[in-house]
Image 1 (cartoon, rainbow, N blue to C red):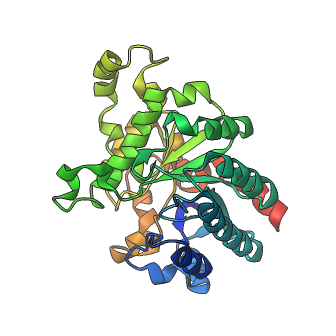
Image 2: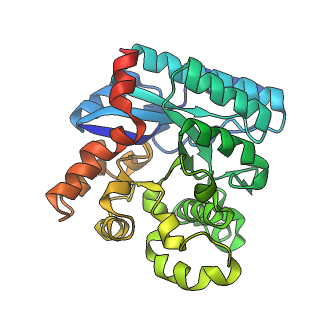
Length: 318
């Protein structure tokens, strides 16, 4: 059975509260009506042999006012916890943080992991167009490392703030993968995983362009970063990457070759890809990839659940 580590859910209560707190949209993709229909979601999960979805928003509850951001995060995380409590073997959730407010986020990490029993933490690749790898967020990584927490990143759809992407209409189709790539590069430059080796970081969409750049990074990145503790390719292989690839076998094979099958975890980007393929097809392309049966078995059925310890998590919540 499959654990879908990249599945979005926007509770109506959260959408309504966010609308009262700000003029921000929570990031509703095509097919977003699917986000609220739990029974239909469960039916699609059954048809795709998905035993569990790990829930996260497209964009976190990030507001400039700390109190408003905290309120939004509280509503979102409570809604996730309520759904998990109703279906403890079908859903788990990532804690969303009231960024960029560090002290409030530390409190929500404690509440979400200790009181709500969430499976990890969700962060966008950037907050108000500033990388979440920045030094100001160091206390968060210290705490996440102390706990050995899994962090799931997601692009915020800002096209890496580049007019060369956004002005030409590629903010989502290309820019999202560039955001994924950027957060890996930022953590390499910041030496985050060398300093905080207990954190398990998941980057979506097969790591963007990172799989194709490992040799080039090893050759050229040390010129600007001479004090790296190891080759960039070795650091890149410490991350985990989800399998959302729009059915591209070339991208999947490149990621397996670059990172190893043991560092790929199943994800769907639910419900985004439903505009192009069925939920089942989002995972089935791996089964028909020509990879070895051992690699397919690890990617499709083992890695995600093992990474998050979700079997134990489910049994505790049942």
